[in-house]
Image (cartoon, rainbow, N blue to C red; front, side, top):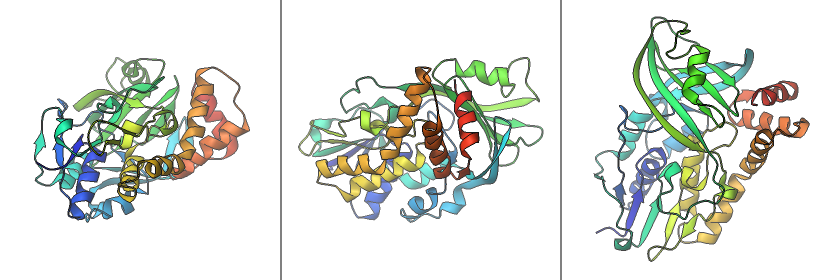
Length: 327
């Protein structure tokens, strides 16, 4: 039996599996699977420019997975210049895994020298996080009679999004700390409800949670359990932007940091904290919004920098107005 196991065959686990394979190392994959149509919960089809370089490190052509690219997005009725894209996440994961055998049972940790926890928000193998902050979300792939535009709506300490995929299909979703995301989508008229703007065929849907805790509050990243320990990557260690909820690129980056610090747990933890230091500032903004505390130029600057990382050009005045809409 292999000395290495990966728990979780989602985006981050599949990425690490493929990177290890490319380096000539084998790993056993464990994943309970999902009942959703695409096999992913949540599905999340959007990503940012750093996606290309990371996917190409696996030997795959990142461009073949892109469904749509956008040079702008409507955010609360404000036109924002942006470099965003949607991609075929289920297909990419299938290609990353190739013909890998996925064991649909819990990991027998004691049978391995090292286990990587890539179980996302579940964090199935690492110790629980004190004060963990997770947000409920609801997502759909829908098809409409006419193409829809991309759009983001802020509110209820969260946001709703609508991003076109291929053809007349669209990824629609919402995450919120305060309200039922389904109710928000219905109120917007984006899905179901009496106020739907146009006929919508639901192709699939799922519910889940997104970790907004951030890496600094998600330690430890490495814990005992087998000879070389249990090492976390991706959302299991909080590598999701607390403001935007994006974890595709951060998850892959965390896998790269693990590979670069394979036998050095202390250095790995330091590398993760340094790489995602910006997430600590974002978490502080989320906490201020949750506590209904005053928001100012400092918090607007954090949102502006976050937007830039996502390829969006947001001014300070716009950023402050958008932050106030988060409440």
